[in-house]
Length: 157
Figure (cartoon, rainbow, N blue to C red):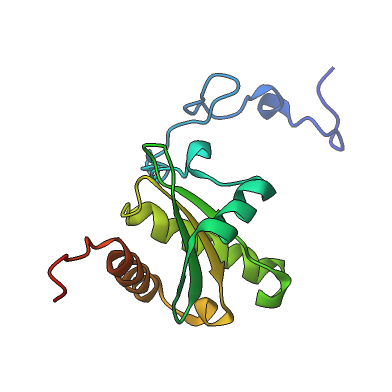
């Protein structure tokens, strides 16, 4: 019999399927023009991190302390080919959001300026770091480390 007037399936339109569109295989996203491949920046690798408390303590005790406006940096030569970074962001700096932002900024500065190869670097950020731009932090980091790592002249000048 023909469909009644109050039925939910409307005659010939009842069997229509969705419009055909480009679909990705299951488990993958469709490649659309607005979602092009993103360039993934270089990562901060695990071999470049200082994680253990004993390593931090050793750097604090035997390393050189360098103070700057935005952070205090401890520097200790290591026997590795890669420079390692440790960040000691305490609650004095602020809440979790502020501490995580400071750590992200410090990691980016360390990654961009690969000056301290063969050194363990521990950075203790100060509250002023949160208000500084990345370029200011990079400039301070470079000047502090270059001043310390610059070969010393033996003629006394």
